[in-house]
Length: 482
Ligand SMILES: Nc1ncnc2c1ncn2[C@@H]1O[C@H](COP(=O)(O)OP(=O)(O)OP(=O)(O)O)[C@@H](O)[C@H]1O
Ligand SMILES: [Mg+2]
Image 1 (cartoon, helix red, strand yellow):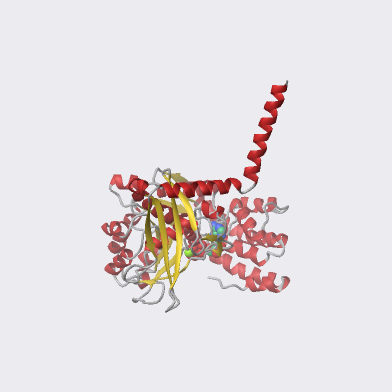
Image 2: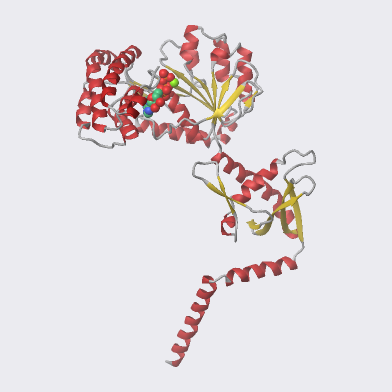
C-alpha cells in the first residue's frame, strides 16, 4: 500500500514538474542554453547574402531569402517581429526586425539567419545583409539543396501572392513604367471568379479539372515533345460571360493576361514579336477572332494567325501558356482555325437558363430562393431567355428590392419569350452537348439579333423602373451599355 502511495506521489510530482516547465518559459530557456552550448562545441561557418551586388544592383537571391525567411513558422514563434501590411487585401505579413536572428532546420541540420542592418553614417543609407550560420560539418551535406529549397519555396510563395497583370499591345514602342516592349500593363482587377460565373455546374467542374490537369502536366508535355500550352475557344452570343470567364481563369491559375488587339498589329512578323515578348505562366488572349478573320479588319494574314495559334514560335516564348480565343459564332470559321492542337477546348456560352438565372440572383441580389422562383422557372420552360449581362443588369438596377428585380426579369423574359420560341424550336434540333478526350464542346441555341431586341426592350424597362427606384439605383441603371 505504502509503495503504491509512494509511486503515485512520484508520478504526480513528475507531471507537475512537466506542467510547470511547459507552462512557464523554463523549457524554452533550457532549449536556448542547450543550443548555446552546442554552438560553442561545433565549428560554424557564416555565409553572407548582401542586398546589393558589387555593382550596386539588387541581388535577387536576397529577395528570395527575405520571402523565404518571412514565411518560416519560427518567425511566428519568435520573441518579437514586425507586422507589415501585405499585398493581399486585409493581409498582414510577418517581417524580420533589424538584427533579429531566427532558426531553421533542413535535412536534420539546424541553421540560423540574422538580418544584419548596418547604418552608414556619411550618407544615412543602410547596408542590408542576411547572415547564414551553419555547422561546418553540415555545410557540404545540405548547402546546395538548401539553396534550391529556398528558391523553390520563395517562388511558390511569390506565385501565390502575385499581383496579376493585364498586358495590352500598343501601336508603338512604349517606355512608360510597367511597359515591356510593345506591351503595356495595368493591374488585373476584374472581380469575376469561376464561382461568380453563371455556367452549367458540370461544365464548370470539367473546365476546372482541365485547368488543374494542365498545371500538373509539365513532364507529360515535355515527354511528348510538345509545347506546354493549351488553347481554349470561348464562343457564344454577346454578354454571356466570355471576357469575364477569361479573367476568372487567370485568377484561378494565377496567370497574367496578354490581351492582343489585332487591329493594332501591323503584320505577321509583328504578331510574332508580340508573342515572343510574352512570359510563361500567362494567358494569351485574342478577343472576337471571328470578326477579325471574316471582315478582314486586320493586316495580319490568316496564315499569320494560324502560325500564331500553333506555330514553331510557341516553343520560343516560354512554357506553360494558355491561349484563349473568343468568338460570337464559329460557323463561318475556316476549319483550319478550329482543328485540334490549335483549339483544344471549345466552350459554348449560352444565353440564360433557370440554373444560370439562380446563380445570377444569388450573385446580384444575394437571394438563394424566393417565392417567385417557380414562376420564373415556368417562363424559362416556355423557351424565353436573355443574356446573363442583360439579366444581371436588370437585377443590379433593382437590387434594393429582390421582388421587384425578379418581376422585372419575368416581364423581360415574357415579352421576349414569344419571339424566341420560334427561334429556339428551329435551333433545338441542332443543339448538342458533346465531349471528346481533348475537346469540350457545348452547343445550344443562340441568336445575336434577339439579344439586340432585348437591349431595346431593356432600355424601355430601365426607364420604367428608374422612375420607381432610389438615386443609387438610377446611377447604376444609367451605366454605359454596349
Ligand atoms: N455567365 C455569366 N455569369 C455571370 N455574369 C455574367 C455572365 N455573363 C455575363 N455576365 C455579366 O455581364 C457582363 C458582360 O459580360 P462579358 O463582357 O463577360 O460578356 P462577353 O460574352 O464577353 O460579351 P461580348 O461577346 O460582347 O464581348 C459582365 O460584367 C458580367 O458581370
Ligand atoms: Mg467579351
